[in-house]
Length: 401
Image (cartoon, rainbow, N blue to C red):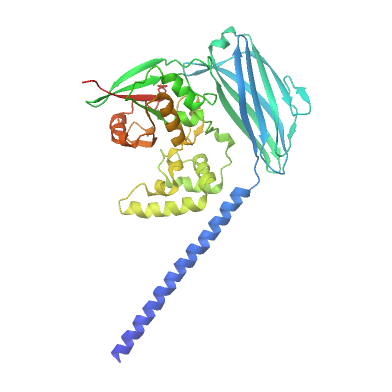
């Protein structure tokens, strides 16, 4: 009798455990389906597909010329641009200088050319097409040719998605063909190596990465050197920075950002939305859940391992140098190709690093993996700095005995 009762209790307990397991499995399946549906809604939610692509510029005495395209990447929706205005500021030692100027804007849609002068007329950009915009500023400041220019395009989009405001900023650098290092700063390394920080002009989207770094360093590097560039300057040259005003953050971005340390770039709705746009809510929530579980048992960093490099490389506003301190900078792309191409051109090892003032060093990519320990040891003191040092390039050189 006792054996029968015990057997029935065991069977009853097994049934309860099976029900619990089935409940958990059903919960995970239903939650996953709901999250995937939310991801699809975010992906296909109506949005503007207009983008601005800068083409070229020229800074002359008393004159600034800038050409760009507005491209509609939608396959079936035309979009209107009811407003567009361009601002110019001179850059001078970490400050923006107001420049008095008269502007002129010309639009070429492939059929007609319109001189809009000071008034932007509502312009329609048809699907899978683009318009060319030519901007000309005549300034009374004859010194404009000796200044770098911070150009802001304030514009709006109107269509099936509603009405949104945008801002795109571009650096028009003076002497954009002169790539001479402004200063070489020698920084003590370990006993066997020395470190040289290379000060450059402020870099921008018109600086092609391989060509620019090569021109700055071709007369500096020696055989056996290793050249390192920070991930943020490389991303900026690749145009991977965005003004927060251009980000339409969701309720989920505002909710999920609360789970991160206040100093994290994912602790803001805009920073989190960039990651959501990249990998989706489903992956983020599962990575966050697993990361919290592992954190309770003393294992950190699981979230970033599960979400990939992109999540760790987002730099929120104030996280980079002037004048990009009001932009969110995403991680660079095509890292291996950049390292290999620059290494081949200069004849030295090349690496891309993410370093901070806390001694944390991440080598994101290198043309020679055998030098990883040397790089990590000599970059711990962050020779490039994280402020406005304008030293995006570091050279590690073995000391002569």
